[in-house]
Image 1 (cartoon, each protein chain N blue to C red):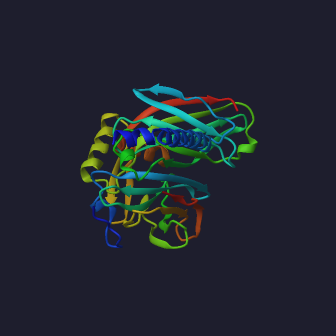
Image 2 (cartoon, one colour):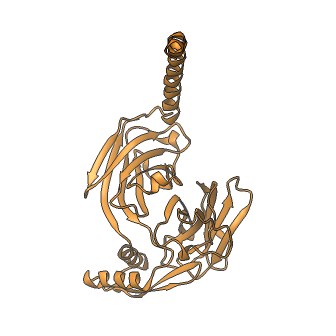
Image 3 (spheres, helix red, strand yellow):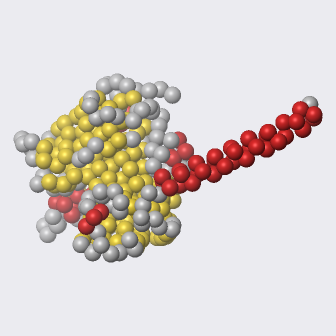
Length: 213
Length: 119
């Protein structure tokens, strides 16, 4: 057995060397594929209200600007970031937020989640520095807003003296929230904003990252 | 793991413990801003989509659609003109699915239509 090992030694070393070289080449290729941008940024981090958001990448080589961020969330609930992109030609609003590794159990069982954000504008129009701003993180509404959740939201608004009151009506495939009371000088949109915020959990930012193309 | 690939299972029955927002897409037009969520239940390994009127001062016609990965077959849809948000029933989510959200004025066609979001 030991003789066999001695005889196979040089071959094993050669195979090992070739394998290692292959892995290194593949690793380099994969890294380049993951960061195909002329605006490759070193990681930037920002912490607000105990939550750290990291900018992993910002890409202007695609038709639309794309940022990749990772967030160390407070819980494993369903959180949505609200980002925008400030440029020299104005603000670009978000078009898509896509969770990375979305259906992988390692993703949804962890509080550290990464997402790819696409902004609604043309990359070619961007000149000069840009700032990616995540204004807030918010949990999403459940499909059914239970009486318990609805009442808790109403109580929050009462405690805050907002003078806004609402009711919740749910069905098998939809939900409706009716404003039943609000100050005369408050728009429906403002009232709905307060109601929505009373039903979800929010962590306020902003988390801001400036990138020099 | 039980997979629900049926038109009879509604997400609210099964997603009280965990639901994941895989992709959110927005679109804006005269009727306001609409958001489509492609959602996932790990327990059920099932997808569904939800469409939300993000300018809910006025009631809008809303439609949630769940498509196959090649965006050629509509698997699930639900439409209503009385809710702030609507959602489809669950469908097998063990493979890539795509969602699309539509919004319009009540009694009219859809003017705010998101692009497909897939995961």
